[in-house]
Length: 140
Image 1 (cartoon, rainbow, N blue to C red):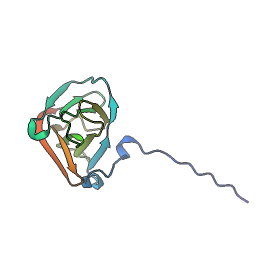
Image 2 (cartoon, rainbow, N blue to C red):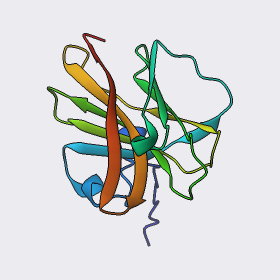
Image 3 (cartoon, helix red, strand yellow):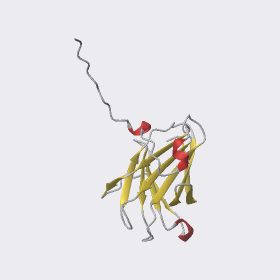
């Protein structure tokens, strides 16, 4: 008789695509549900207007982290989106399902050489994220 050993490995954050948005199944998209955090170390922040439900998105360049603050008590998850001009993954979604006034952190890995556009908004359903452009950055 031969004994078999099964090793189960948890997916890494880059592999952790989720199903809260249909786009998450695409190979060039990365989706994460953010971890609730109390403090936000960031290099740049921007806030969507009322159409984006006042979602605040911050980026920490070193570490490729995105922080999303839910700015409206509306029953919808706040979402931060980072769209890169190059790389195999072009679109990254960070969802904050923790409620109004809370922050969530997502840890991505992007190509530093590309330019990026950052959007803030909210998830309406599994096929729609309403978003507004909040800022751009490059070479970080």
